[in-house]
Length: 541
Image (tube, rainbow, N blue to C red; front, side, top):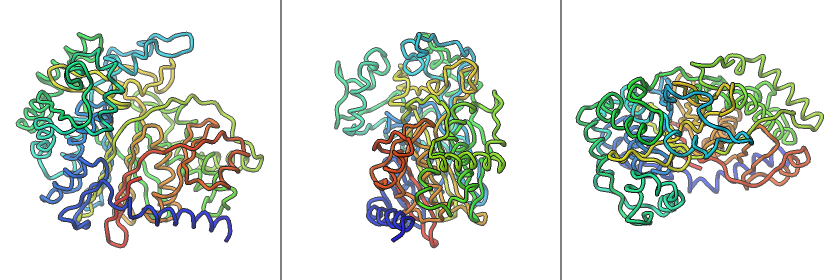
């Protein structure tokens, strides 16, 4: 057995072993018939979305209703006050693909020098991560409403009902959520709104207890009755939120709330093997994924031996991270060379550098600053009409800014933490600016028909996991199961390299000899739905 065939055998073996466990995990279908539609991702979101499909809704209705439900129950990862998200949807029977941006925007009073730095260049007191200065305008409500309006068939009033029931009737805290609450207890104890919501008396809530949020239920009911999120951004609620920011030293004003808009955007695309990848544009993370895959195309990756493939995979990704961390920011406020980064010429130039690195057995030299980020949930959905949807939403890290608007039960995300605090950086904070983030909701089409929705949760590990998956699915033309099973890695451009346990020992040795500092670690969790042989197949790993 050759090395190349051995690698394929390993991936197929992993896929075969995992298939039973991952084919429909945390997914729900309509009436038990997977061809009527499915939702895969967060368990409560999948359950709610499956019910929507069962009752005649389409893939967009299902994913929006599921997202609202997850924003109530997956409180450590997202929330109604989460900083934002992004989506890519294929509607009109899967023939029209668009993206939606509902990333948080910084308040108008925010400047590059808003945060005081210590001698090491770190923000004093980490107030860009936790507290009222860490929160911008929440984008999730506007984004989900726009997604529904763009591709759904149900009303906002209808899709909000499961989330309203969960807030009013309550739900039992899982052990993982209770653990997350306990881990954030020190910060919650300093914030009145958070203390009321997450504490039972003087102690953090424990697993099995029922968490009700009647204040949030009242607000969601008002929005449902008006069939609009406008009261949140331009009415009484906006004023109440702005008042809390002012009271606690934050910067968001009622004018900032009123100015906020979610946007319909044109996806970035890449053609390969009679397929097209469609992914959300900046400030989302898909640009970096497409750039790295384009480099592999220029290297004719499919012709490389296993001895060269692992190095090519790493170096193409390292270079895209180098560009990501040095050049990218909000394209509405800074000049980002998007066309150049995705051009054939730049891909060839990068491919030459990667080839030279392989020949000299020396990684490409460049310096980048890594920054651990976590959080998010992701949902993928599809229906019998050929519509596909991929949607990611987030607080940021656990419970975001770890502050809650008292009186509304609204925990806020920390979108401001996603800015680079280096003065002059393209992703530096600024008035109305949207921060660079890691979400990569993507759709793949073939001959004008959607065949895949995929995305992930796991902070900065998301783009790299999507890169591994799409390299296998599109470049190698493998099945969803095989693409899910392929071993993943994580790098942010430096020589530190995290490898999943399933990486072959021969590759680990080769990478170590080459100069990478390798260790075993987990990856992001991907949720995907594909149409294979006329059948919808779901996977999550």
